[in-house]
Length: 405
Image (tube, rainbow, N blue to C red; front, side, top):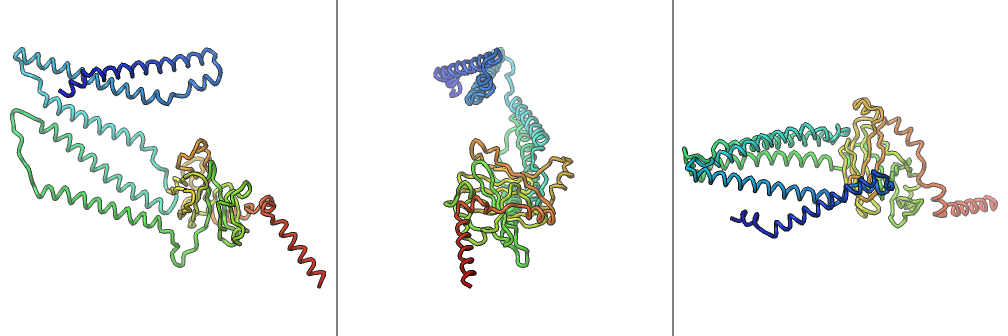
């Protein structure tokens, strides 16, 4: 009765008519704009015609959903009238239990095929092969969890819809009243609990190893590299000969001092700036991550590295690359292959520009590359910070001391 009132509701029919009319107007407007563009309208109009309307997509699917609902309701009414007609004629009515059971079985078959299609079609979109130590552990955890959940999913769906079909209502048998069974309830409670406990412990230990940023005793210190995100680029800074990065202060950020390095810290004086993130293979790398304006996200899929860069909240991520860029080119059979550093947060209109090439090289190649990098403290920055005047004063004082001697 409630569904019948819904179908007969004048307000719903009026709303459907309004949506249909509005959708028709939007469609006609798009067709008209496309026609004008094809007939020689200005280039701007043609470009505008190529861009889909923001509301056209959702409206289309809303209308499609309503049309499907009304079509199902109409088919149901037709079947109901057909069933009543057969009863009036004294014939056997339609067996709705059989129809429902067949529909459930059909849904099971289509659902399983849809899952198979999804795995075979979208399966290629999985993450690329891991190129870091922790990446292999993370992939193992993922595949174990995925295998268990998919297996359970397939078994439960077959049992669920299979039982509905096999034990559908029938005049030849009655339903068995089976209110309680301790053994069955214990089985379906304990078994999932054991599986989930194993997965949780496995995940916890794996994640603990990944996030354990403390260098082990006797282990060489990680190579510190600073990654600062801003709209819309990444800034890279390497330590100099002292192997330590100088401190930064957001109040010192300027056109020449892009990350706000504080040169009162003596470790800042020999820091280096780079355009490409070059790292040595099989060496522990510590990325010191910061952001200057909005939330960004350091994302390197091959290394299974992803961590948000939050303004005012310095973070870091340690990993060890295991495959050089040259080796990955050969593995992928792609001479143009490059590891990339992305921003995995939609941080504004130029979000797509936030990419940096990442190159994994041998230790010798890394040292040779590092020796060619320019110091962060440029002549322009020295002039801005009045370092030149200070140096001149020191030279004059030294000269005076030499003359006095």
